[in-house]
Length: 116
Image (cartoon, rainbow, N blue to C red; front, side, top):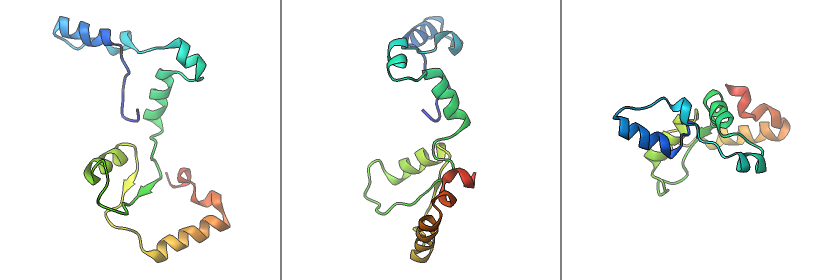
């Protein structure tokens, strides 16, 4: 959801196809009042919030193995599109231990929100 601009109904697809033109998405927002009330969320607000505050902002990712699914290339695209940083190499052990120590001493100092 972190890169979606709209969540539209199937009618948008059908009517856009029929008109041979992409119709205004605003008139076709997906909505499910029952589920939104049950789970206490709103689809539209969730998408708008995700656009403003990307899900991986402030996080850095490194792969421990190249044998992952989805592929490292796909993971990199997902991470970057969510505002994260994909590290091409593992940080040094010294660097990781430093972060671990800092986190143990002051957990708030390692929150991703502080490195925006």
